[in-house]
Image (tube, rainbow, N blue to C red):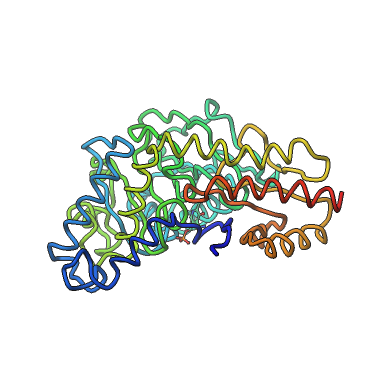
Length: 359
Ligand code: PMP
């Protein structure tokens, strides 16, 4: 029996996709070899990859003047590549420090150039975001950087700032394709695939092509986005297995209502959990209601002992991954696209029962 997987990433995959991978792992569609044995310069991989990129574009109606491709190195490598390419000497970049992930990106950028902190959520313990309308890029900023969903803190932008001519760059690792996004409002969107899109290994990059004109062109090969854009991510060997799995997940998303369908499910799934929290004096959500994440629901019990007990007992019921990140403690239920609706309902029922016994 499969467990209910509420882990923050790597995380639950659609069962159909796992089965499809299993079916084709040894002999890809009767071709006599596995996709992970095939050259990334050969037809078998390229056919799959081209279809993957086409599905990717279709799901968010990505305009033609954006390059789309996959890289390795985790989302973390982008914390470095972005400033290396766009934070040129004599310029500065605006960062919104909204929690662990945006802050890590800002820390790396600070090592490479001049960072202007437009917002710092420190005083609230990173439980809230600035009003999008209040976010104005500073004069001369080379880009404005934000993280659309703080996976650890459980806060998510519900709409995005209008940054005018200043390129807006977003880390969407943990809420990508959980809702429609108007790509043309961003100069760059990127993210690790290991939450909503597939197994760890690949990072997706969506970048408006004219950003390459603004980049530092004196970089080592891998660091230079132009090299990757020109080769649609095949400058070097890409993370083949991860991309293959992503290609299947994209088809699964298409078959399940696309980004709109994912949003509908995300509202319903997170609604189950937030409803329990809101109707209880036992559970507490530390985050500003306006910016509650639909992907990572962070909550607390009255004591750390009860939280440990919650994790233990949930595990016995087949519910995994509910412990909050070690940096913040508490509990966290990640409800990514592939988490079945019934699992969110089961968790809500378990929460009520746990409260009844311990409240
Ligand atoms: N950004 C966000 C929002 C994340 O949640 C994570 C990982 N959990 C990262 C960046 C870092 O990703 P990676 O481990 O792929 O480097």
